Image 1: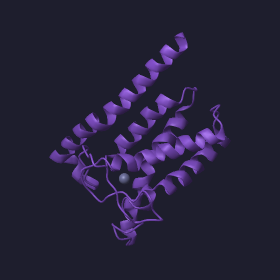
Image 2: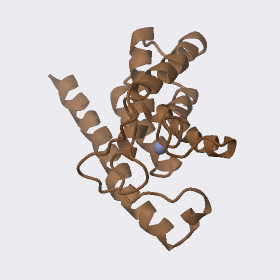
Image 3: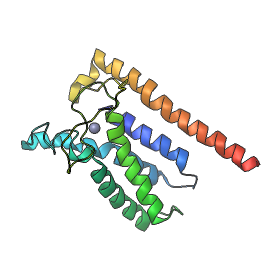
Image 4: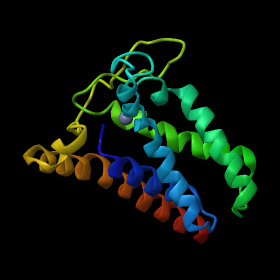
Length: 179
Ligand SMILES: [Zn+2]
């Protein structure tokens, strides 16, 4: 995985590129949560779920089905408790995409198991053909030399592209307004 920080930053920053409405801090916190939750699957190994099974790491919680289910759940919660000015359908699409940004980024990493995006229908694991992001070690390995390499690679391949998307969206909006 890229580290959970990078998952959260990517979803919140690219999310900001698409949400024009003024929304509260909680909205962004929930966006970040959506992008982090799929890696909750590592807890499964403590309960004896094999790492590479359908419900192991990068299994079901990294699928399109899970993104839709969890995204819809968060969207309904937001629709009920937060004032966003966005329709329920838009919220469902938004939070499902925020959740699905996680497996997409995982598919760009150079290690770990592939991502079961079509679970539970298929246990097949996938990567993108191009995988520039250095995979983050699970647990304390993060605070090693490899940790520095991981952070640098995430800044270049995750943070900067997210920022570029946001800046581009802001420029497009400015130009649009002037017309
Ligand atoms: Zn992951």
